[in-house]
Image (cartoon, rainbow, N blue to C red; front, side, top):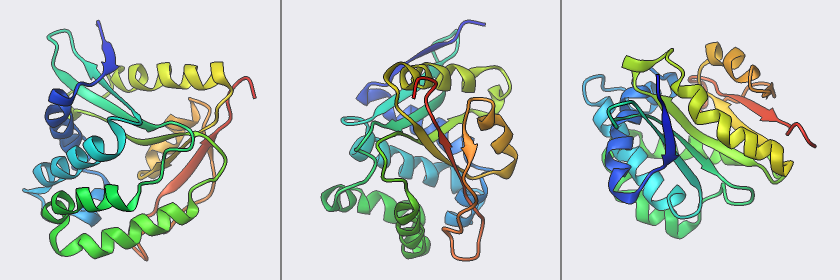
Length: 204
């Protein structure tokens, strides 16, 4: 199987957002944020598109995986060291899209984001904000293809990496890439948990 991973262009953001919406349809945090089953993938795509365009496309690293036909089947969205936090201007620009995505859950999601920010490490690091693949291709190596190059860069530059796993079952997967569990985070205030994970580079 031939896998191509490269940064997305601006014109490819809507398709990547659509694929991520499908990827996170069964995610506990996403189900808490967007309870409506049938509209969740489309509304999640609206949210992912806004995040990528306003927070990550210019200053982060937004990688997409393409199958042999050239179709986007997954993506990984990173922030480089020192760039993970959003500004007030960024948040205002995203607000209309986030309101469409979360509707009556908007304030609750905002409180969740605040709790995540307060728990975020201050040491410079690469932040894996989003990673997901189309459910139709899970288990075919696209996740590895997305993670391996950026983690190799972390090792080459001596930079740590950080993520929050929204599924307990995925902890073992990330541990295979050198991430260590850092407890659990109740960002939802009594809803689904997150599991923060930290990775020291191989050269640090």
